[in-house]
Image 1: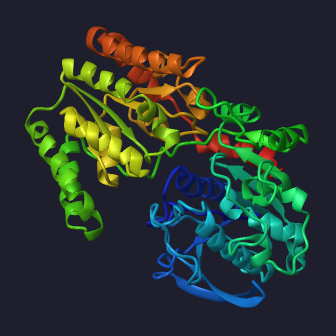
Image 2 (image 1 turned 180 degrees about the vertical axis):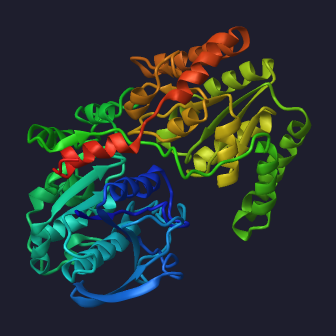
Image 3 (image 1 turned 180 degrees about the horizontal axis):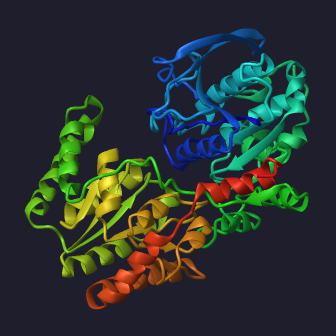
Length: 513
């Protein structure tokens, strides 16, 4: 039996610990490992809230900033029990909940300032727990994104954690664009402040653009035994320099990635999707679920600032309770440049799509929260266009109904390492319209299982996106046989975690599956 430790910032196997697709991966991969008879421990920060229903295991004492820190290790109950999977959180008063999904902080003036501090404390506590055998003798430690790469720094440079050198460390890149860049010194969040007595090689840790800073994403790429990203096409993309907005590639780290590739330790393996133990919604509940969610949000003090807009959205929904639209297009995502840059830069393209939908009694539902400038843009368009329903909140019931009841799912992502929404929609037999990039290119085939668009220039991409939407509506209205075939093909597609984890064992873990 092999013994694994997964270290991450999110884990959807426990309640209230998910902001994005990483949470799904941390939930699903350990279940596959468990089915093979191996043991998995999964650890995330408590964010000052997730430990409350847990069982206290031990105090962890370690040195940071020249003083002794004491963090607490708790074992916490999962949403669903699986054999040989154990879930933990690290609690410390300085590891606080952020404003993004009660996990991440969004520091405008100094990006990554607060998160770097809390993940340094978290990673050092995890290293201390490993050192004292809290998880038994480990064979593999699997790290996820920059939030966990400080463990590789401790493994290489910290004299108290030499024991980490006996373990194979794997590092997964979920989103290369978010890199965790902070100064080496002269800042409270700097490496020198937190590890004043640790000698390290600055060149091995530095950001290629800002040489007075550590790049924690680069640390993961440079120091891990195996590096992995979440689709084969995204791997190929990030080996090349970015040229935004036409192409998003290595984001300054392409040389590090090419070196890892040349050394035979960089792999692109497509994420899987969960086809069992899933939440199931019933048909014809979409609009009632939205209205229920809106009434719930209106009672929350934190939502008072947008109460007028929520009421506006609820009023727009009332007619659809009796008279369903002919066509429902939807998107569900955090409102960021990655997901909706095309709409932010070219709102006329979105308006043109809304006008096309209006002619056939169609609507566009967009659910999400995020960057204020994106929220403001979509609120403004919602006030002008009756068939644009901007649901400015988060609700699992609403999301499940959107996936189930949409006719088309729209993912105009500027880049997409893997994407999970398209897999969830295809699972329901819903065709997707996607930008042909990263994992979307690996999962959606144009006019076979869905629809795609691309282009050499930004203007060409926008033109082709609108043209592809025309093609979607043309087939839906005038060629039901072709539409039904695409739906059936989409529903037949299977992106299983079993296949992906077979490749994890072979390439990342160096274990014969």
